[in-house]
Length: 258
Image (cartoon, rainbow, N blue to C red; front, side, top):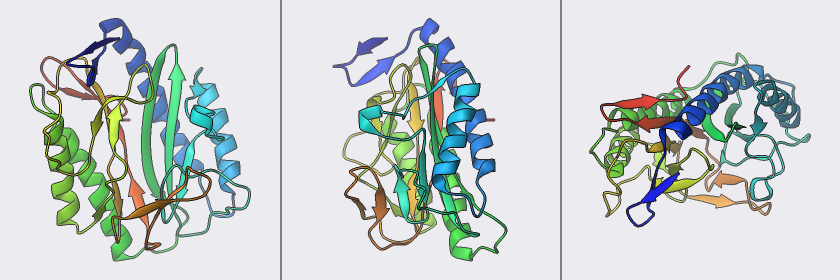
């Protein structure tokens, strides 16, 4: 890879983009398969073990496993867990639970990273949960639509925040999107809120993860003693959707769209 502009963003080579695009493609397929496996009565550890098998069947390896000491194949976040949930045999999924699966796959030097939140089972949901899911998905799509070659990272942030505010959802400020490609976390950061900086210009060869993390209640969160699990401060549910995008000369390509 090539670092430019005081190393605050990464421009990937055409050869790297080929590998990143394929890693993102299989990660998206794995995300859908894993999310579909979640059902009431299973533990999140069982889901994680299935996720590991799904990822390895792609020919890749779980990117998150042992990343800075993370102990599982994927992140599984239930209800009020925003992100980075650690699968456990003690956590049994119930009908009506909100489950976020955050999946990373490393394949031939490329990395894919994507997430979605699903409802488990067939229990009728509430209007608030529908608002949370619809608003978070719409915020992601708005962020993608705002990503244009020659624009700024701040355009993405502004678009996400406008949708989140319209749906009256709490925007987590402690966690942000990021560059991704040949490393899991690359510059720049991609906030879901408007900051004082417009951020780097969106240049061809940049690969970004846009990932709204929105809460039904307060935007405040805390990290549990395991140093990973992030929960909402008020115990209300959270949702997390994530796509990888590639900035080209003429348009923006969504790499994790199925």
